[in-house]
Image (cartoon, rainbow, N blue to C red; front, side, top):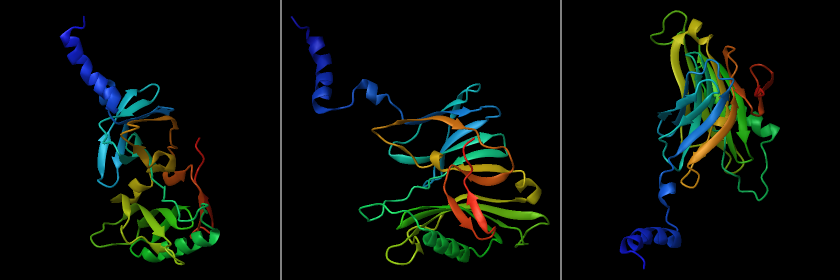
Length: 261
């Protein structure tokens, strides 16, 4: 004889199996990003940033010795960039350099001419800063993502002696027909806009990494494990690692993303 309470308790589970509803275990899965920073010496903080809302989710260093971390409390079906701090001056910053696929059946990469045209147009659009460095231009024949770091070192309104403005931005260009144009549906993504003394800026060590940007946390895959992540260089400077190359006209040479140590 089947007890009445067993039937009542088993009915929801049976319906969940038949209708494909998530069971109790699935309901407990909370969106999170996990990984391992190595070496972990000097590791002080980990966070995930949703660029559209500028919301920052502060993570937890689970094991300071191994560098194991977890960023929980995320919202599913969103895209995040990872941010890792080693003290106040050294940072590893994820950057989303992904672009939509082109309309071509067979994907075609950016050509040298495409990069040259975009490079020129980006520089023409920057009027306020006097030092502009394009760290990378990535994409395909119709869409491009451009990572820029720039400085205003000349005196500006209200500036103090030795003061400058540093900006790091992510731009997107598209080529709907024959000409490359800056996307009209967005201005750009401001990664950094800081006003400071030059003596402070030259001590900064910021390393951008495309593999740590555009991390998709979905309802189907709420937990994303990034595995082992190499710690960034502590050497002062703003740089990109693990990405392609672009010709920087200011230096008249190729600027390459540094290889992961």
